[in-house]
Amino acid sequence: MIRSTLLFLALAIASVHAQTTSPVFGQCGGEGWTGPTACATGSVCVVQNPFYSQCVPGTVTTTTGPTTTVSTSTASKTSTASTSTASVPAQTGFVKVSGTKFTLNGAPYTFFGGNAYWLPLMGYSTADINTAFDAIVGSGATTVRTWGFNEVTSPNGIYFHLWNGNTATVNTGANGLEMLDAVIAAAKAHGVRLVIALHNQQLVNFIWTLANFSSFNHRSDYGGMDVYTAQILGSGQFHDVFYTNPTIIAAFKTYVQAVVTRYINEPTILAWELANEPRCGGSNTAASPTCNTTTITTWIETMSSFVKSLDSNHLVTIGDEGFFNRPGSNNFDFVYQGTLGIDFEANIKITTVDYATFHMYPESWGESDVEPWGVQWITDHATVMASANKPVIMEEFGIVNTTTRTSTYSDWYSTVISTDITGDLIWQSGAELSVGPTPDDGYMIFPGNPEYTLMQQHAAALKARG
Ligand SMILES: *[C@@H]1O[C@H](CO)[C@@H](O)[C@H](O)[C@H]1NC(C)=O
Ligand SMILES: *[C@@H]1O[C@H](CO)[C@@H](O)[C@H](O)[C@H]1NC(C)=O
Ligand SMILES: *[C@@H]1O[C@H](CO)[C@@H](O)[C@H](O)[C@H]1NC(C)=O
Image 1 (tube, protein in one colour):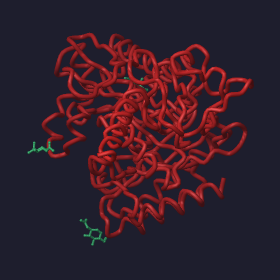
Image 2: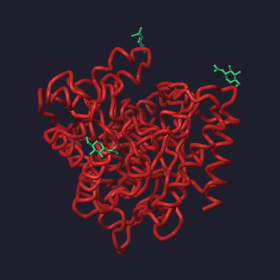
Image 3: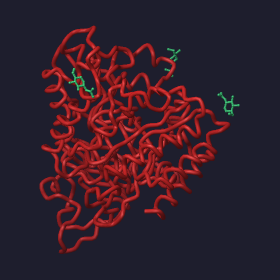
Image 4: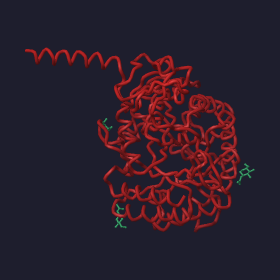
């Protein structure tokens, strides 16, 4: 009897407690937040940006010292922290470029990690997002690349940009950019930095496609750049109209401005990326006969200088596949011919582009001898890196053949080290979450895979090389 009364009491207290405090890594404040502003024991509420405060592990020490991590304008919303110093992982300073390397607060910054586009797009709980970062950090990652876009034409699930006719609105709510806020907060709590892509060449509606790969092709009408061209100019446009039509450029700038200005002072973001894999043609739409590398180089100049004009804190990169414009070279291998609209050597010279990237999928590009072909592709980019004197990142790479994958990645990682390529991000990092594994496209590396161990070794080698 006494026992059950005590149990009842304990449950009653627990449920009251659950309503008045946020769990570790939960939200505890921010514009529009109506939930608890106090944090579970052992954690403290820290302002991440005006829209998101988070309970991070640590203790509040009441002192008369200066406030370090809590901004005074929003501190009143987040408890008495204005007179307190939170002992939380500090993340200060912005990653900078020095020659072909990165630095952070004057020290070398090792650029290594993986892609995890799905982080803000799947509706994962904060706990699951943190579990994902646990797995990613365990591979030795310092840097993670994710998506800062999601175009839709009807409000559904998570979306960042909603089109209605020829006008679009940015979704800053809980099923919009607040998901990106939560990813940034989790990255910060794990001490890693983010590369955030602002757009995609071909994009489909990620809520559906990535939750369920078998329905991928049924949803391809929700394309990224093609959504802009179809909504603004009507269907049937050439893909590259996206890069040249003034109304479309203005609409894209409006979206970019909304995202970039939300995070200008956020050191967890390493770089803004203009678009994932821009090309003259889309996956479902043709390139116009006049599109060439000048078309996209000009667009990169326009957009990178626009981002720089808004935000002088963050680095800017393109997010392209690093194709060469060397017609007739390399046995007419298509990735060297300039026909896709990318000229790596021209683009790396753009002054408002801080570093360059290349991607590497020799299997799906139809290259005959995958492993040595990759070695040559890495080496060719390293040569341009040295002459341009800017960092170059192998930003995506992968094969799906698991028989040869570990030995192939081992060889490619060694080539990154020996050619002095600045760093790399695997496609892609994965994790087991409470709702199951993260969406696997055949390339995903989970903790326990042999490639995961390889990543840990490569992270150490990159750090030692400097
Ligand atoms: C995935 O898509 C297939 C085919 O459209 C469907 O049969 C299946 O139920 C979907 N699975 C989930 C988990 O939505
Ligand atoms: C692309 O085409 C334009 C004319 O349409 C031309 O002026 C320009 O030189 C071409 N660029 C390249 C790299 O060939
Ligand atoms: C994977 O690579 C091995 C070794 O080159 C080859 O024998 C095998 O056919 C490949 N598997 C697939 C599915 O391509």
